[in-house]
Length: 145
Image 1 (spheres, rainbow, N blue to C red):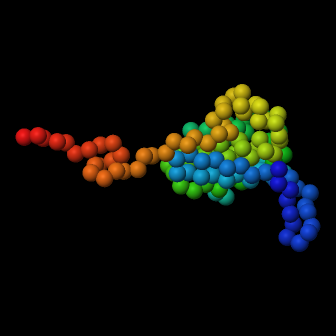
Image 2 (image 1 turned 90 degrees about the vertical axis):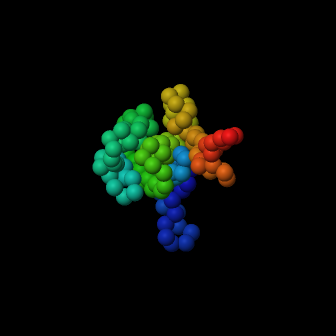
């Protein structure tokens, strides 16, 4: 848990902050969870405006799992890179990590029982292209005649 600091040197604020990071393919999301009034924003846009709809549903799954606890917090997510599906997964993982850090072991246990993928980033990425071919595995045909 990260205690908030005010701009004045040496002064600590009483607000409680937590950060979560999620990665999927080339998408990287950072979520900041802090005390508030239930606002969820992705790249400074309310999460209700997130398109497509299945991406939004995937992204708010960690919030729905813990229910009423999220009415008193704000979540701000910044995301870069990736496509639609990778972005949705990265947002989902970052929010889950931030909430688990903010609320502690009780929420972490709920996420682990439901889906371990909420807390652990998927490390699979695209294999890079190799020489003498059109992709990572595809090669030119040989004719032998």
